[in-house]
Length: 378
Image 1 (cartoon, rainbow, N blue to C red):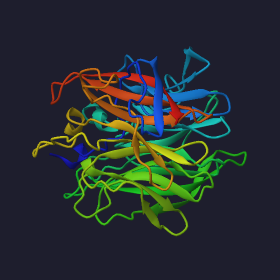
Image 2 (cartoon, rainbow, N blue to C red):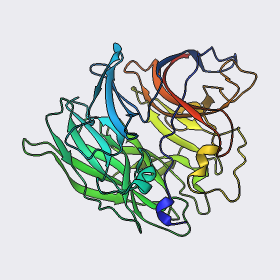
Image 3 (cartoon, rainbow, N blue to C red):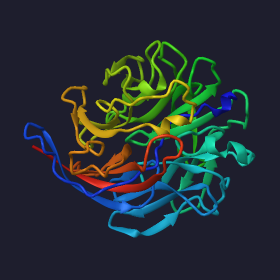
Image 4 (cartoon, one colour):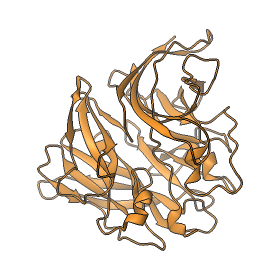
């Protein structure tokens, strides 16, 4: 298979279900409600100042576009990138600038041929660049200059602003690699400059702390801006289906491995608004049987995950959802993959993407929903 087919798993399309309380009396956390907000979604971000949500939606042209709505009025939607001054291909992975004036997102290059569009979907990011948009659509800027390629194709996924808006964090594919499932990725941190001229990024620093060429996915900055949190298969011999969550000090490069599950899929980690907790999605305990001859896109036919929470130092890990437990009220008699999430400003709920599949293997179909999961600390 051509190495261009090596893609990142970033965003699963998802589905959602009515919720119920956690039934473990010893648990520190309870899920007190699950409410469907949208019957679609990709990666998601929540702007605290005015309760707006940014996500992406697959439109009738079969390309994703960045979409904005308010949690105060979810039925009112604004499509930021559709018929706008950006390439009209896959646009997604939106993240708010803390001012609310900008959204950063990944945009597929206009010259990508149709056969390779599948690799540019938001969260896969092949042949995509970072784009910045004014949220009133008054300006659009391309921030990176990755050229379209088939061999050693580059790309970007999951850009994230620091809490003060001064820096940007993302993951970038830099090359093919015969020993890597999705190719060779790195993570990058840059200064975001908005000085009255065209906004831009400067002073880009590249990090590649893995013991092997592999995959990274960027998730966010700590509240003091000193650390970033990300996913990666950093351990020698660790497959991308066994990724862990790490935090890294930007100045020193020092790593802290927050999950230590060599063969479990851990991804989409986000600090709570008070910085005391982290939610993420994990396959821990679900005993996935990965085919030996699985192709680089085939993970989505088998992956099952749940939403988990831990303290910010990696302690007190606890499962929040139980979609894949046939005995639990969350279960919908289907394989389920919980994906990206964003905290509500008050830290009492999250908006979460969930994929609900009608089976396992290439013939399985998924439905997608964006849900609000309400939490209670016991």
